[in-house]
Image (cartoon, rainbow, N blue to C red):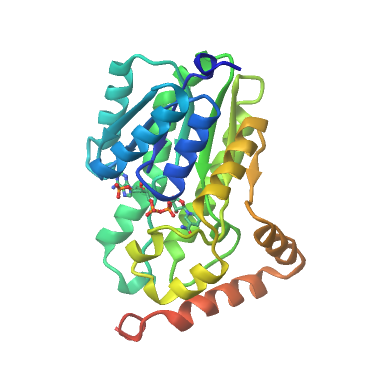
Length: 271
Ligand SMILES: NC(=O)c1ccc[n+]([C@@H]2O[C@H](COP(=O)([O-])OP(=O)(O)OC[C@H]3O[C@@H](n4cnc5c(N)ncnc54)[C@H](OP(=O)(O)O)[C@@H]3O)[C@@H](O)[C@H]2O)c1
């Protein structure tokens, strides 16, 4: 397929980590890309690298999605660009590590807004445009934490379960249209994510068992192009899913929560 036939993809959280890797993988597959995030220099770097892969069809939008008008600014910019949108990647997200009752409500609100409200708002606004395309895709970044409860990451795990269930429901609603919906559920990925979430105490585990973002992006984009409902990237993660399916839920959530609680810094666990 020629690059012109693929239309454009909007990727939130496209400045680094999984989002940047997805943007570059989509550019490699011939999509025009529009990356959005807050860090201008990092975004411009991804834009330049994507443009080198897809014949210059790349744009960067510097927007803080947590600002009240952030999502509307993205939507306005897309409409001003006037490019055909055929793919939406809801990837921007963050975590906050700590016991639910002891962390400030303002942090909880930020997490719920970025991880749930923003994808819902962007998808609702862009769905009519996506439906106009002959073939269009929505790719939502969930997580393996969507599969079970996770003490000390309660709201994060819940937000990722929300994304997974919402994606799968939306996919059924959109059957018979040109739009498919795929959720990618990565395990540990080596990005700036743990540092931003204040999870340095988990870094050794993330580095030991985590994968770089590129294979995650490859797997996510391949699943998206096939119209698969859900993908867990990586052999070890797939194996973990099989074992999780064989175990009672209480064993899965107890084991995972135990690992996180044991490493939660004392000051936060005992405040
Ligand atoms: N890393 C993992 O182990 C892992 C595992 C499973 C799922 N995930 C999910 O994968 C997604 C990407 O995470 P990552 O690991 O790639 O983390 P990351 O390296 O921290 O990237 C997060 C992205 O979101 C953007 N972002 C954060 N806050 C934003 C805001 N207020 N407005 C606009 N953009 C914002 C960041 O850009 P700026 O800072 O430039 O704004 C960055 O591009 C997240 O949804 C995460 O929950 C990660």
